[in-house]
Length: 240
Image 1 (cartoon, one colour):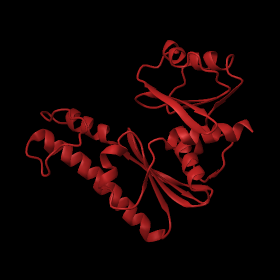
Image 2: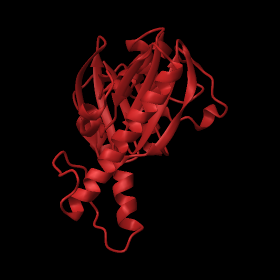
Image 3: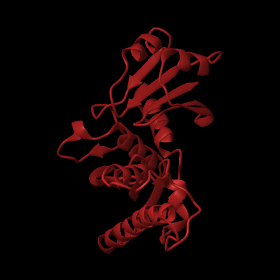
């Protein structure tokens, strides 16, 4: 079995794959050795990959390397099934690398726009087997927090599917403003992208993808697991 460890900005996702299929996943908000050991109790892990968009806790290497036959820590130096055409590859987040790998595995040889609506919203473009770059924008939660932090009276609001448009109260006004603003941004980004690329696939992923997937005006594939699928693909690619 393969173990996928995806350390994000707000939580850590663990997933187990067997014969290319995900058989379980879980999320940890407080990363600790004890939590991981509890989640993996009774599982026979043969290969593991660790991806982190921030620091890598020292206990991770102490826990995995003595107990798992093959462990890969993802970085821009990893062996990948595509080329990275980016001026500063060392600054490219491993979550973006994984999403690109997942997209490549799903649509090999195609032009693909990957939109990851997480803590930040990232737009990444894969052309055939070459990663050409992308954009980064504040995500939903970051926008809600900014309105609360940088104003005197606006409350802290969390994403919701239920709100009036236009907002009939302050909470709805903030919710509608943020979610509608993000939706307009994504739709216009795709529309602009479409002017230069006539044939491409669109993949939407990320923790906040569910709030906006039905508001995108273009045909797209919603793949909430594209990052961990990509990590499993990279793990198998490096274990060959």
